[in-house]
Amino acid sequence: MAKYKTEKLKLWDRAKELRHRAYVDYARAHEKGGLRWAGGAWTLDAIPRGLGDDVWSITSEPYGASVSFDKEFSMRCLEATEKAGYVRDLCSYMRNYWGSILLNEFVFPDISKEFPKPDFIFQDHICCSHAKWYQVVCDLEPGIPMFCIDVGCAPAMRADGDQFQYIPIPKHAVDYVVGQCLDGIEWLEEVTGRPYQDELLRKAIWNHIRSTSKWAKICELQKNVPAPLDEKTMYSLYVFGTLGKASQLGADFYDEILEEVIDRVERGIAACANEHTRVMSDTQPPWGFLKVFRYLEQYGCVSIGSLYTFGLIGQWELKPDGTWGAKTMPPSIDAIPTDREAMLATYVEWEFNKPEWQHFYHPALKSAMMLKVAREWKLDGIMLHYNRGCEGLSLGIAENRLALQAAGFPVMSFEGNMGDEREFDEARTVARIDAFMETLGVRKA
Image 1: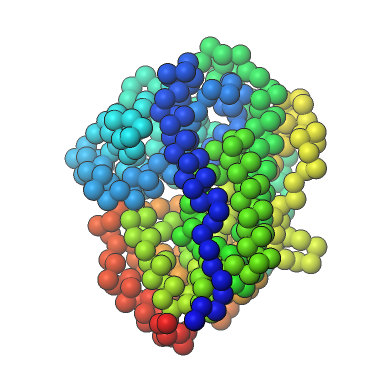
Image 2: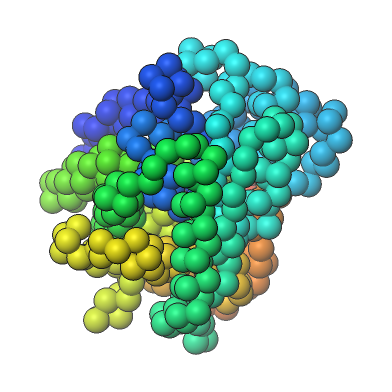
């Protein structure tokens, strides 16, 4: 007999529709006189929105993940990239993306048979692959202008043992990034021939703030027992913040989904009907094998999320009582300055706060954040993915494992690759899950 009530998300079909629409808008932008641009999921995507409401983007990491989910197409992409001379230990999202260009095939053939070439590239750089990713794209598709902003210049946290504290962002760091943003706006006007509209930028920054704060609030509700969502479902929801944090549709959708998750908590609706064990994962999952999260449910185990799902787009702060919660939004768009440089400073300061940027500076920051989640979300254990497909987010993961174990949390590690199925052993991973559940004293239902 089920321990808790469970039901499908009411907005599930709406989520699928919006995700499909994002790729349709990009691929078919030229049919309506619009522009297409490419950049990463962490790109300061509010900035190109100042060119008009008909400017659409394709973000590289979500696209690479979509390719990874389609195992047959992914294999052809990876093989095409290797045939072109790129080595297998590079970012697997990047290799899938390049392979799609080399094959000139879009992962969504119902939208476009050919890969839709962007009109320009607007990227930022904190991960070791970000700028280089699009330099190669420019080689593969000559003639695409590219602009890249260096954002890896100041942590927003410091670690204090197994705790962390937020620290002020130095003014010179904010000024450094804002200066690049101002240069980028001039560059956008030059390469597109369009006048820039500051009011559209201001609106986009407000949507960005709404999206990132509301997503963190949704993740904060996962502290509830039973958890209203499971991590596999969260992957289909967090994606809107990676497709376009500054999108009006995305920000409005997070308002809607937050209301539904609050309702699930109030009515005691669970993601896992027999939840009695709670874990979290780490970094990107092996996208071709998401069924491992469903396998956990046979043990009454739910993965409530991870620092990756919480902090890739979510913005957080320490509350007065010391708990970690969604970063407080300004009361309205009126709090955002109207002067271009001042509004960009507001935007940049907000972005510097991103949790997933912090551990590029030191693994102790990631360990402290993971311990915060483990304690406040009432976890029984942690699953660490030694992800060969992402050098950036896997950096320091062995140190994270030791810190979590030293704090008394059981840790299971498994090897794999977010985007290359050849490096994931499903049977071995399932066997490790079985052994881990045994150490936690958990049996299959």
